[in-house]
Picture 1 (tube, helix red, strand yellow):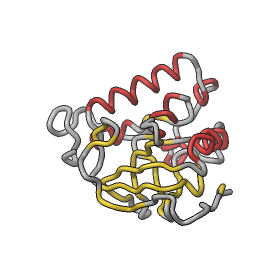
Picture 2 (cartoon, rainbow, N blue to C red; picture 1 turned 90 degrees about the vertical axis):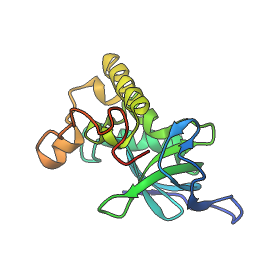
Picture 3 (cartoon, rainbow, N blue to C red; picture 1 turned 180 degrees about the horizontal axis):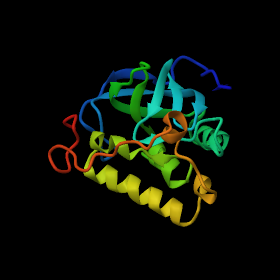
Amino acid sequence: MVMALSACGGGDGASFAPATGNTHCGVSVGTQRISGVVTSVHDGDTITVLGESIRLASIDAPELDQAYGPSSRTHLAAMVWGQSVTVTYAQKDLYDRVVGTVFKSDCSQVNLNQVASGAAWYYEAYKCEIDLRQRQAYAAAQAAARTVKKGLWATPAVAPWVHRNGVEAKVPATCPNGDGASNGW
């Protein structure tokens, strides 16, 4: 089931344009931006803004048929549904979804909040797509949530990539350029 909310009015400042730099809210990000109201929340790591399906980068939430999957979606919806956000990105995935970092108007990172609240895993297999500072923030957020058994960490949990594919994700030992991202951010 997909939650949907239609945006009202036409002058909400929505835009779909290249970013003016490679940072947003002090975070190293992709060069493209989408700003608008979140009109649907599919699951714990996928939303819709301006008709674009947005896959939250650097995280993987439980599938809806997994334990904690519906709760992860509910947590994400409570944060962003019907609210204006800015999505920064550099690429789309094979399903033509924007893979991006979602920021609320107060500069809080939605992706990181999902991990910190125990609503998603840090998807370390894609760590080379973000800078060292972000990798450290995601790893610390996950470690803290896991330590206090917050959210999905309260009971034994199967990572969504294992649930989907039956195997652990391959995590790179190092990234190109030491701490730099493989995509040049």
